[in-house]
Image (cartoon, rainbow, N blue to C red; front, side, top):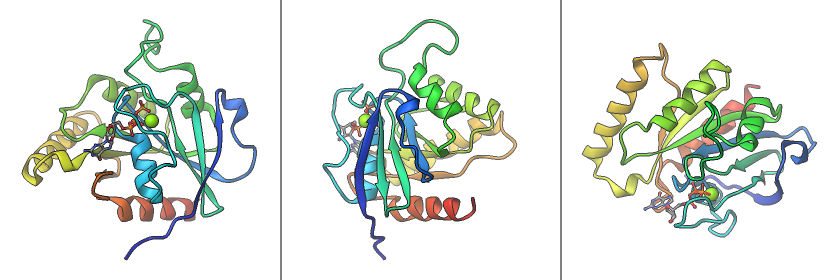
Length: 199
Ligand SMILES: Nc1nc2c(ncn2[C@@H]2O[C@H](COP(=O)(O)OP(=O)(O)OP(=O)(O)O)[C@@H](O)[C@H]2O)c(=O)[nH]1
Ligand SMILES: [Mg+2]
């Protein structure tokens, strides 16, 4: 059954102080540059031109709010791991990302997108650790599933779970997606709607 989504661009913010001041909650996408965050916004909303997509990493530079069904926001964030901002411990994540993820009260749930083709990347694991330390609710979305066979995909997801299980007693919710094929759309939307209904 196709889920209907009404989506509308609301605003781009260069600072957390500029995000919308209403009571609608944010569901945000984060992950390495080029992992497919903006493409996933477009796939979920069924609107290919909504968020800007590019083959060149570092395309999304601001916090982009898209109002969904007049009731919550999908938030497309800039990626990390492309332009190194500084060499300090947390410097690999920009101030904009850290301020938003750790301090913004609108931020209700964060999806960390990881490339399903790759073994666990250190920068993603460090980011996930940071979320854990700060009690930020999050899930993981494996992107670009169309680029792998089902067997490879299963192997990679299993390896990721095994890796996270070394540090986490309970694993976060996990989803598989392909923005090319529409894979994962209904599962992700249902999860979001349930999360919003329970808050
Ligand atoms: N085959 C395939 N390609 C994808 C998928 N998702 C994204 N891409 C491609 O990956 C590239 C990066 O996609 P974006 O959606 O711009 O990635 P992003 O994470 O928003 O990147 P930044 O904004 O730079 O952080 C583009 O060339 C997309 O077409 C997918 O599910 N399958
Ligand atoms: Mg982007």
